[in-house]
Length: 366
Image (cartoon, rainbow, N blue to C red; front, side):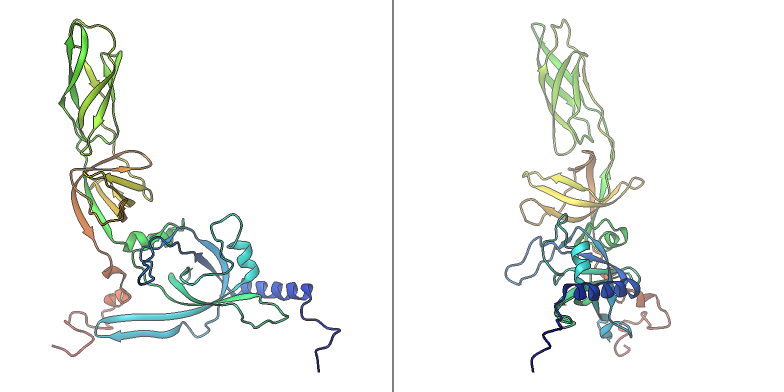
């Protein structure tokens, strides 16, 4: 027998009421979750992977964690290679709230649903989960409607991705664990000097007698207070030449050439810094930290505009894009934080759990 023609499950008001109840339940029993959409930066067309992914935005939305007895998955695995945590979780989010909060006209998200590969950050456990599957038909057409998305996720392990979400606790993951370069900057600064050559009372050339050191921007050059010149700046922070732009008046004796002092050092955390290599390649990196006491500049996500791998080089300047200031690199140290991000890092501090003084605490004693 066919369904009753006097009752319909597709009544819009009933569907809206059902959605309102779902949303209210999620707000009561759910958690505030940060949704991080993934930006594809450099996809590997062979293996289909995107190693240097970027997460440059975050959206807070309420979600319900379906797990009731803790995280799912295979749990904590102990092997001779260490501890591996394979937590999984299932999150439920309202479709309507997704449209209102995340999939909006004024942001960069154009997809109509959560995407596999995107991340969820759980503040109460300080964990990142990666979406592996989005189930969009559960519950299955109740009232001829689909009110929620069900997100099946697994624990995410950081691997040098770029986080610029404006949420400090999330962005600190990159600062703490990204592959970094610690550059010791030479803060020595000396002012350049030059002399003028006269021919018939007119300045014909300006010779640089001391190129100075520590210049990151072209300094102002004045000739006896009236004339002007333009300095040519090298990539090592010194003046190599000066061209005459306004010689001023006629002179009986050679006028004084005054060159402005080098700029101070200022690096802005979170901004980009650039170094121009000898072949013209521009090397760029994100400033993670700058310690003015030790003059150590920490850069992460370093790459070049030619798409090839280049190391930062010494005796050349790294300039902050925002302040146009910087200094010359005097020493380079690579800082690999992969070991600090291993999942068994917390077990290292438990003296009564495993004896890490042994050469192989997970296997047979030697």
